[in-house]
Length: 251
Image (tube, rainbow, N blue to C red; front, side):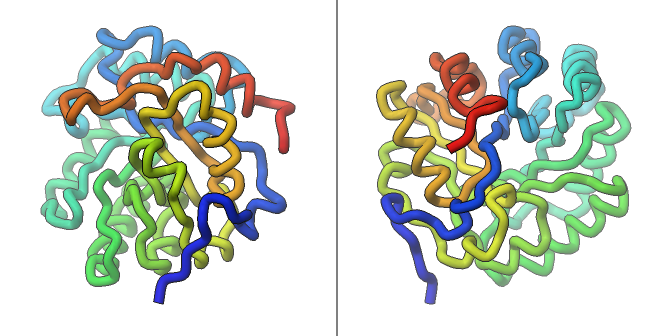
C-alpha cells in the first residue's frame, strides 16, 4: 500500500535539506530564446542541470546554435542532459540508444533526461536496461527520470534523480509526497511546476522543502491548452526566485 505525506506535513528528509537548486526541463531553441540560454550561465545561479532538446531529441543533424549553447553551458560548469523520450516505455530500445549516441557525439552531454519515464514495476527491468547501456556509453552519466509522478520505489535505485511532480500549481499546492521518499536525500528528487503566480512563490518553495525536493523549476507560464510548452521561456519572476534560493540562502 502506498503511503503519502500531504503538502502541509513536513517530510522527514527535509530537516537536513541542502539548499534548493534548479533543474531546467528544456528551453526553446537558442535562436528563439537567446535570453533564456544566456541566463543559465549567470554566475552564482544554483543550477543542478539543464535539458537540451533540439528536436524531440538530438535531431537528425548537428545544430550549430545548440552546439554553441551547450558548449557555453558546459564551459560554465553547468550539467547538460540530452532529452530522450521513453514514451511511457513504448519507445524502441534501439531508437533510444541511437539518440543517445548522437547527443554524445554532437553535443558532448553530461547525461540524459528520460522524459515520460514509466512508473510501473512492470517496466522497471527495461528501464534499468536502458540506463545500464547509457552509463556504459558515458562513464559517470547523470540520469534523471522524468516520471512527473511518484513511481514504484525501486526506480530510485536506477537513476540519480527522479522528477516526482510535473504539473500545474493548482495540483501542486494540494499534492502529496510518497512516504518512501523520506529514505532518500532531497537531492534525489525534483519538482516542476507551471502556472504558479508570483504571489504564491513563497508557498511553493515551502512545499518543495517540506516534501523533500532538492531541485525545482517554477514558472508562471502555462501550457495554453497544450499548444505551448510552459518550460520554453523564463518565468516572469526569474530574478526573484534566483535571489530567493541562491547562494547563501537557507531555511
